[in-house]
Image 1 (tube, rainbow, N blue to C red):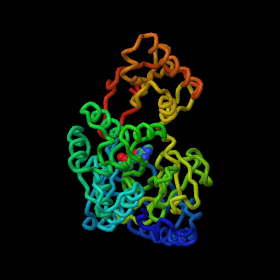
Image 2 (image 1 turned 180 degrees about the horizontal axis):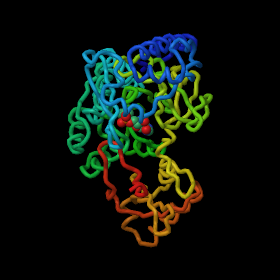
Image 3 (image 1 turned 120 degrees about the vertical axis):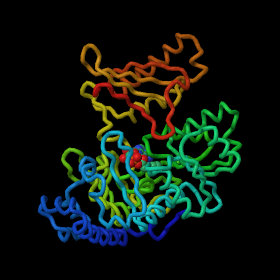
Image 4 (image 1 turned 45 degrees about the vertical axis):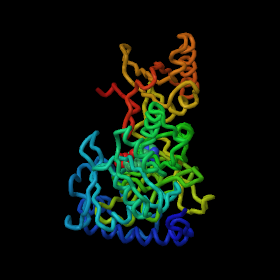
Length: 433
Ligand code: DLL
């Protein structure tokens, strides 16, 4: 089902017009109400009036995460604080948190965005949405909640964690749509197997999984183990939370709600805007956000855009599922490696489980050393040591030939890598310690 065909299937000329009008309004608003942006414009010698077409947006300076941190807590507000009805922040694990503040209209826009997301996965009135994203300052819980409510689905705000209770709820309330991180969905499958619960006998038909990187191979695994259709959903606190882009049934890229969040792809080094189809850093400008509007925000997420009418009928531009992050990139003895590439290799190896961790350290030689911990299926783990040795060698060989780095592989027992209820921790980089 298409939640808002007028917007999601809009002709490109009307969409461009809508975007330009909103952009011009937003720039004036931000210049007038946010001293942080006024200074940025003035320092760069640009005025809001200099932008009259989408291409002109390139004249506006970028906003970075570090800059946002400096505006903590109220520095980005474009309205009087009395207009704010809700606040979320990023987790702040890597520094001062980033604040997203919402007016009533923003909450409505958010619900619109995530209603589109849920509808893309087939959610409608009568569905039971088990929302296992964390409720709280994290945007996953409430963001999805507002969309489910807009659709008129029955949302169960179970939040993350308490895995056995999740399974009980799923069975007793007849959950039809599951929303959580992809790694948590696999953990649910694991515990279900232990409890003797077969997903084929449950009513769950679709899942909206995001907030962390996952691969197409992991999708196959999830769809098999949970017997549902798995959709990738993307978003970030700085822009609104979940609802920025999502996969329709075609599962060939995520439709960006570009009538609300204007995307650009830039060269992360030169900052130059790249054409459609070229890989680079994703940059967003919020077109209608009132509380904490953001201009040309550098997400550090890497992808590319494709345009055209999708087989689902939507015309909204698509971003390829994330290819990595500019700051996630590991430089191993000078070779650029993304954790997603390692996952890609691992997911092709039949004997392994989709649970892994990459540990990077500097050995006695002061050179980078990578150790990949991978869980092996129960049956193989109890096998003869020589078979395990073969699997280990196979993985090391594949990593070397695909990525060009020598990594040590350590096969570990099933369920020995820590499970996460939210975002999984895939990389432990000890070099920074
Ligand atoms: O993770 C919002 C969200 C909640 C998205 C629920 C989807 C579902 P943050 O905590 O601010 O917000 O983290 C944003 O997470 O810049 C990406 O690097 C990463 N991320 C989000 N979705 C995906 C995805 C929420 N589908 C950061 N695939 C983003 C890969 C993702 N990475």
